[in-house]
Image 1 (cartoon, rainbow, N blue to C red):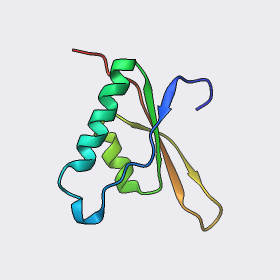
Image 2 (cartoon, helix red, strand yellow):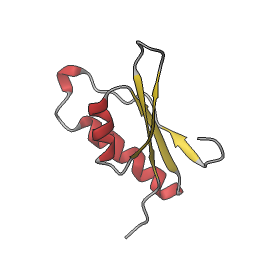
Image 3 (cartoon, one colour):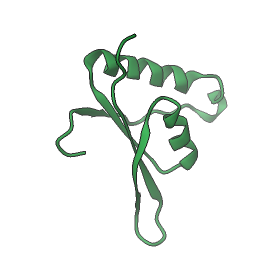
Length: 86
């Protein structure tokens, strides 16, 4: 997103045999806590609608979707403003 102060989050993944154990949640929560301390927004893209809903649980909001060609994937672009400390 042009003109915005943010970090692009990428390459978060958990091996299939270790999924469902909260590893991805802990990794993302750790990274988001750092962004919050630095007062930085976060941006992430995913082609999996299920992952987009997962990111929304952490405060990301869908900004737009982008279709890649006629037969290509749809990219879900999500944005999260930093959370203010309580």
